[in-house]
Length: 357
Ligand code: SF4
Image (cartoon, rainbow, N blue to C red; front, side, top):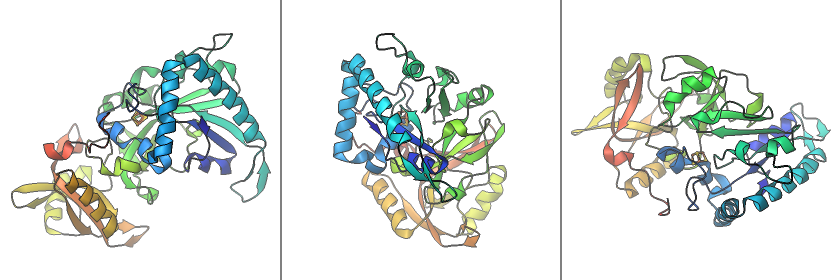
């Protein structure tokens, strides 16, 4: 039920923590909805589609677990409780190499119960004492990301929640930051180039917050407060056209949008809005190798969308390099002090990969 071999969570081991993560079938993939506030963009781009998450055996196991959660909640929670105890022992007996390269013994176990779901575990009571999992394990740290705006900051002192921005909950970002909750934002940055994450992000209320690299580890409860947790695209997020993935800071300079558009129309090294015939195109992915860009364009075309692969010259790790961007029909517009991208109706349609969604 609980896994520990996630490439991102295992990055926490060098800091002395082992994350055990519970994955269910996200959104309504199983027929039961485990993500009440999922947006179209996040359901399509969900982490369920990255790494092992798309292998048939993994998908089946997640489906079965989700079925048990809905059909026999008490058995599910008892099983989870048993696995938490077992995982605590597993972490305590583990050896690891710390950030200084020294061998150490005994990791601190931490738990993420909503690896690919958004369930209010704070409301689920079980066992003889009818308590929540956070009360049964008061000395153990739990953490999660949530898209539910009203879930509260930290329902229990040992349960840390990071609010997760999507294209349809952005208006709650300011409120979450005021509550002292950090906000995770997926930026249109290739996962191999986390250094391209923006340093600051201007939220919908016009306030600007510093961005930390959320891919460095998954240990969100250690993050300083009032931060945007910047995440790179993984899985199908790189095909997003809904606005869930924020393309922008690395593509256009919001404050000089009109100047940028003018330059971009003449200079092929600059990314921006471009006209081809009567249609206007905008970049949805950049800094790719030619083959990766062609792959994305192919995926878009298979779905009936127009796509163009265009060479550009971004600055990567201090050097000007040749890279490729994928363009699709749409325009940049100004909206509440921000530039946002409007994609044509056809481009907004998410890829249909599972008819049960
Ligand atoms: S709410 Fe989270 S887990 Fe659910 S579909 Fe969206 S990204 Fe996936």
